[in-house]
Image (cartoon, helix red, strand yellow):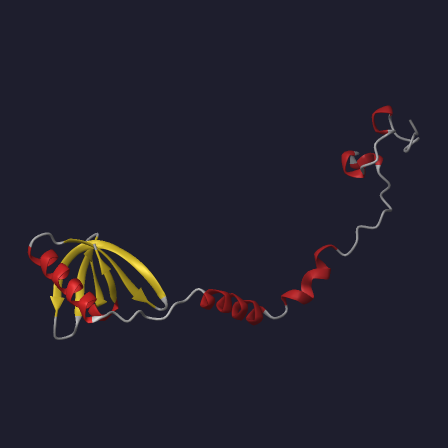
Length: 136
């Protein structure tokens, strides 16, 4: 086997990877390079990264689903049943391009404002009746 580092102790004479050799045996005059300075020009426009991230998030958005009259009647009957018999409700609703899930208790239904007041862990959250997609 060829001796690669003749001036080093026996343990490191045949080592080809400088990362495995302790610093005291390495030549201190070896240049370190520019380090992280070379990456600084890429971080000069943080707005660009924010905009690209927003584009990626917008790709996953969907349009609001349009429910038929039968589907609306079914949702209405389920909501009435939940109000009077079992206030515990699991529903899916549309919000800002996404379908979200909520679990809570029906607190109040405001027909004039078309709102559902839902109690979730003691906090009242107001959802639009038009945004509800599914009730379980």
